[in-house]
Length: 141
View 1 (cartoon, rainbow, N blue to C red):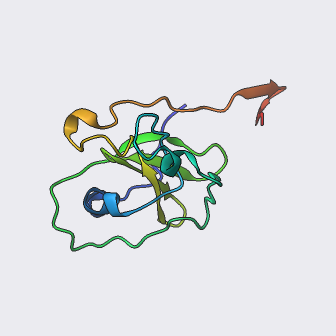
View 2: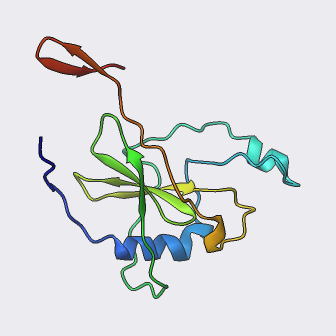
């Protein structure tokens, strides 16, 4: 088996946009903050369902003047061509087929001071379990 690059895109402007505006954006992902003064604000979330086709799509401002940012891969959607990416403090879903970018939310508690010490450092990439039957491999739901 050989890995082949099927997609290539420069996401620098997107990372800069998230770095500059993530504190002003809300997303579907939320980190439950246990030790805050306004517990009801963070815990009373009626719907945490994410509409992967429509929620929180934003236009990237290509003229953002912000220090260099980068993304790390959090994982892949099990059934769609979507890669989940994390900038130091925000997470996005990047649709490979349409180049849409969706802001998912903070990658850590909002009470964290935004410094390089408090960012996302590693993730566990989810891989669907395979069921082998004969010569074919089927994804098990």
